[in-house]
Image (cartoon, one colour):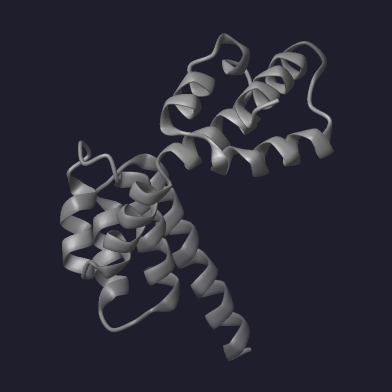
Length: 147
């Protein structure tokens, strides 16, 4: 039995009975050998509609090269370039950029922290709350050290 047929059969079975962890891992490992067409067929299958884990794994296999390149490009952007792209909410990379900015904020390199703070305070309520939480944590640690 070919890999695609085996995986498809297991996906269908899991739709009705749930995944066995060993079988799930086996199927995920087999995904790498499938063609783009087979992966797409699995991804759009009615049997995977409610299966977040397997569906995500299939997606990763379909676009592994593009996902890696996008993350690498974001890591190589300067903080100013990151902020500009972060402000453009239609870029499709906002979530990845947000994570990279949080990482850089915590690393506290140069004046990145100030720029990121300003960008987050001008952004969504969630970003504002995150930056305020970070500032409160820093004040708490600073006060603890002074005592």
